[in-house]
Amino acid sequence: MLLDVAPIRIGSASRLAPRVQLLTATHPVDPEPRRAGWESVEPIAIGDNVWLGGGAIVCPGVTIGDDTVVGAGAVVTRDLPAGVVAGGVPARVLREIGERDRVTVPALPQG
Image (cartoon, rainbow, N blue to C red):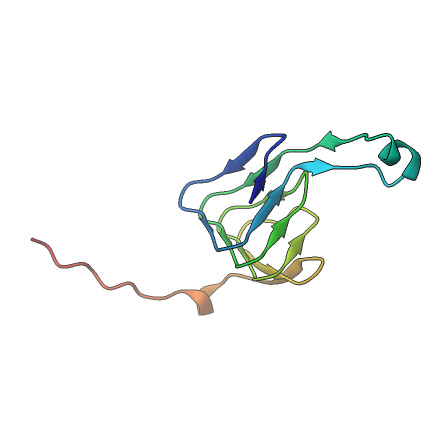
């Protein structure tokens, strides 16, 4: 689901699993302006080759760096740097993506 009252940028080769929510609209915490219907918006920027796991929620104003993986069900309330695995509520960096994550991809047959 995209609530795109403000721009949402999704980089190339990024993947969004089912039930991911990208939400740009926000409301005041102060009850009076909220009761009056005030709303504001903040853009979302998702880098290249990002993977958002099923049911992840990205809140207004968040930027997610290139090559980052966000675990299923995470709620991303703050920016995430490039090249990390993040998860939880609220989402936090669990570790950097490193050599132990690298796999050798076999070459495709030519012809």
